Image (spheres, rainbow, N blue to C red):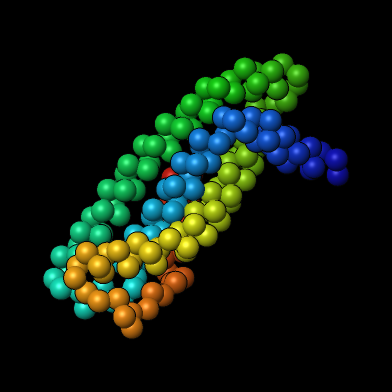
Length: 170
């Protein structure tokens, strides 16, 4: 029973004690989720269909979302490699103290799941707050009035964002 609680506690302590190193990684994750969610939310909104030249707007947003995914992929891998490089000595110490490779792997996987959950939740909340503002800016730039137009929070955008971040984690 004690062994089951040891690795999650070790993972939690690893994130908390290395908070200054995890902060950029967490920030990159939150920003990735936020921007991808905003793009997905705008794409799933019904009003996109009545914009002037809506097919062009929809196509540009789709292309932007794919390009954003590639940019965020590189950014997340870069911050993750920096994080692992910084913690190499600590991981080596765990090996010297007797933790097997599978235990260290499990601990790092638990840390990744923890960061994934925090990034996803914070990014969705931030995206939910600012998506409507960004949508209204898009409508204003297109010359449409904003009276009577509603912005819908869609579950499809949340699921697409989850799939986007999940693909990059695993």
